[in-house]
Image: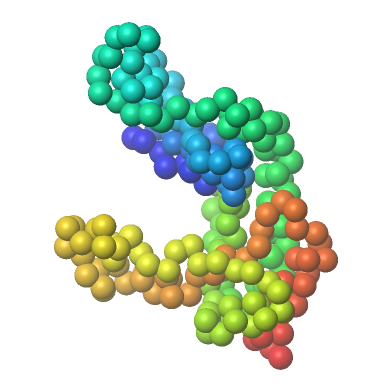
Length: 216
């Protein structure tokens, strides 16, 4: 099993951190992730020595050393600058994670009273969520986005088109209606600001603007 842990560094399921649940875990170091480098980058975790050796060769053109090409590989090395930035970001991971969890708890408490117009993210007691995004489900989403934008609050949709309806997935043969729950949620989901640099006043402002939209 390969874990797509791109947005979940620091998360855990049943006390086990992501990246250790399967044969390998893949993480993104894109600058907007909870641990980011200065540009594109990523990392893979595994406890399988043979796989680690294989990946080390593949990421470096398939070269075992300077002269010997073992397989035709890729140029997927994380350059030194990106590694230095990401390493420094790892030192801040615990603080970043706790701040995002605290922000999410604030949203939970402040927005839960707006149901059924707003649904906060579900929780599972055995899962530690780290909130790369904080995604609500919102009625009249398009109008809410416009309202928030007019008041200086930027939001995003992660993501408006489900995977099975993407052009890249056409060959799988799925049509609209194949996954009705997913499709319904794609019309309602909205990501609110959750990053660790938010102040308490800024979060309260976001909540007040949402309340204003639904309650006047």
